[in-house]
Amino acid sequence: MELSRDTKNILGLQLPTDPRWVDLAEKSLEDILTDHAYCEQKAATSCISLIQRYSDKEKLVDELSPIVTEEWGHFRRVLAELQKRDLKLGRQRKDEYVNELLKFETKGGREEDRLLDKLLVCALIEARSCERFKRLSEGLNDEYLRDFYRRFMESEAGHYTLFIELAETYVDQEKVRRRWKQWLQYEAEIMRNLAIRGDRMH
Image (cartoon, rainbow, N blue to C red; front, side, top):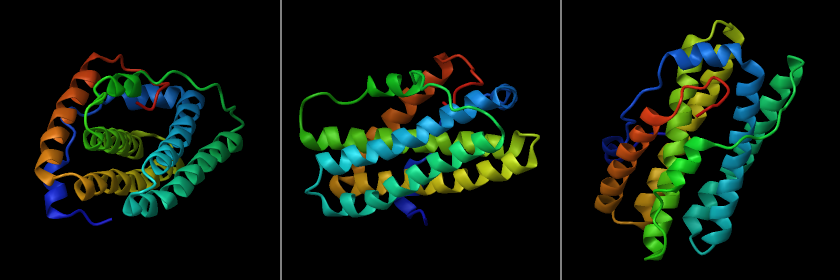
């Protein structure tokens, strides 16, 4: 997906992933693939929830409908990778990163503000996932897995761009930029305070 000039100006995570995370993830392959699988499942569910809640917004419905299919396909691809390696899909674990993000969401107030935050949360999760997939695609010793995660990285890049574009469709662009900057600052603080865990995608 091609980034618009305006979108380029408001993207950019402020704190990169600690390089040690890749080494820990590689040592916990069953756990990281399990967590990745559930992340893809939750991404599909989030898109379904947005479609249900904002069914009157035609562009949102049209754009997110194929993402549901794509994210579920990603879940199946990760599940197949687990099975191919004779690894098991473990139980879903609490996602501390996402739970911390949700604390910053607008509660109450105008529907426009709530919609904006829901779209920006999705954009931020996709952006961080993209950054993590990039780390894995560059740092893993397994050549097949490096390519495996490179493909996921490219997909997530398109997704977070889409959520920003949807925000700019329904909310004033300057307001989107201001709020996105606040989200980026908040997310950086979360990343500073979370422990580095190789069994979690975020």
